Picture 1 (cartoon, rainbow, N blue to C red):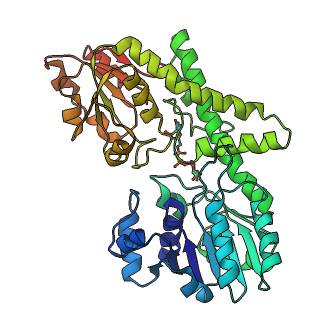
Picture 2: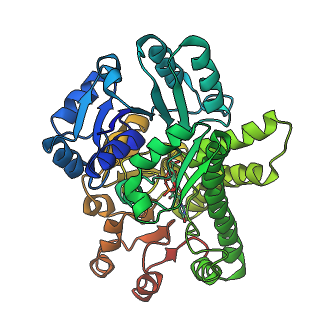
Length: 430
Ligand code: UGA
């Protein structure tokens, strides 16, 4: 049976590893972070991702999934090695490839047979080709390079892996393509489109996809600003637009701007790549600008409404369903409010620990739950669309000593109901 190694146990690596194991493949996940591997062996996940823990435990117990810190000890058992290490943004806007380079250097000294090397990490266009040249120069074994970008969303990663919209296999090696078809056989059988293309096209398709989705969000956020001025409702505008299947209804939810570890980084990289080629990508430049300005713009609107008032901020992660606060619009807005000396009760269902690492201010009270966060406040701000926040008992708040103003930056709550109960309500673009 094909034995698969997955290097890097972050979102992409761990989810890919456990899902392939669940499909019946023999998978070993490798991470040089010993603590992380020890915890995984004890069943403790390094990230919050719905369904992940159960799936890891199941596949580990059933013997299809294992973990190690030493690539050198297992490399020769593998037929395919996926590389899913981080590529964080560098100062020049491009991804930093140092972790990938370290893996390639290690491979040069430990490989003793041919290998299929699959790059899952998001890398600039041309990276696969460069690795190919580098390996050909340094080793006599054949390394078949495959670019296989991932399209998983945090919070839905397992579902997205198991029911993908497409699988992209970018390679110049026909034998590697055949092996990848075996790896993804389950999906081929279920009629998932499997695209066989060049590494360059595969690499660019990832940047193009994320940047296009980010563009949709920036666009609807600009529409929300117009709706605010023109007395229109952005949720309804988005609904009407989305019914046209040339437009599509997804990623048209207006809010505080996109964040996370992918969109801001990838759109910046695409812009830098274009500039390096002497091309101006005017659309991408505008999206970056629009999303940057958005957080300050919304913070200043909040300050106009909430200055000198006691405030609860609900939601700190970059979206619901994750504990990830990287490039979170919620955190940026909270920081803007703190700069203006506002007093804030902060609460997030999963992101508290991570948020405490980046917010340290004496005007902050870290609430233990939503009820504690909103007790006796004059303003409630919804920053992340956690479903839990829909459970706020507005009927009981009517009788509270203070009737809070509601600022709903995710258009999560039922505006009609809240207004009918006599609260002052501000959504986004409605
Ligand atoms: C994104 C892509 O959706 C995945 O396909 C891709 O694989 C992943 O990046 C990646 O490159 O690894 P993710 O970062 O998990 O996934 O989050 P999204 O669900 O795409 O949301 C990104 C941001 O856009 C969040 O801040 C979210 O709140 C915001 N958003 C999303 C909106 O403001 N409105 C929307 O309608 C949708």
